[in-house]
Length: 294
Image 1: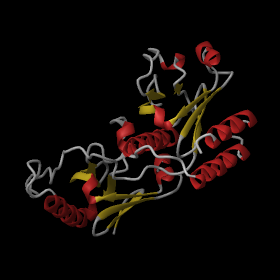
Image 2: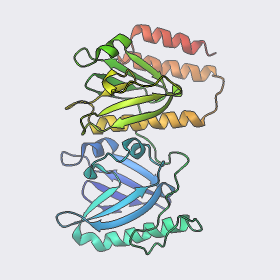
Image 3: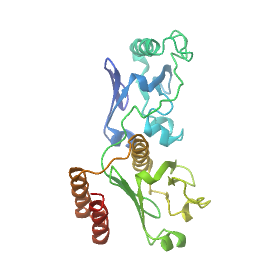
Image 4: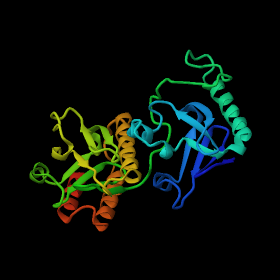
């Protein structure tokens, strides 16, 4: 186990477990993530470099396509919010070097014989840049929601995403389109633009849909961010969870619904209804749709 600033790394035989500190000083994204289990096969390399103000940084780099959170972030995370960076006091550098070398040895053994495997004694470290064919790190779980500048985004954690517009921020185009409800099976991707930039937004990409509006504030398949609306620690885990659900639906073949499965979905729908996430009309319509699958 290696304890650093805002996180602790625990080394298992087949995975790296990252546990994040919770508190006012830790990045709010870490408070939300809490813990992540990263299988060794999800990692591309590990490095140790000098940090700021008497620190060193142990950095595990995930393979492309292995982590839905990093895929959704698309390189936009600020350095201090990168969940794969462990910042340590400089006096722990020797211990950090030991764990770096141990992890490199594991990665080198896994990639042995691959044309992408490099010498683990190299300063860059063992590297496997081949994209993963599926997500290997679990996404944030459970129903999620956050308030954007022009509406509220909600995800039931399984099959449906909804955007409910705010009268104070939504454009006329979105008001005319009405509140939006998207089935995960009808989506092919998620586009997240950090709220730390001026055009921050979350956009859902439909399968074979019409060309999208050029601006997110006019596109009913997107919500836009503003100061205090759609912060990283809420909107990014949301985007990652939806993206993981989309990829999962791509891998699961269509099947006939069973009575038990339909009953479970109706029960879950009832919970959303009781929580106020769907209206009476939406509950009745969706329930009828589920019953029609039998």
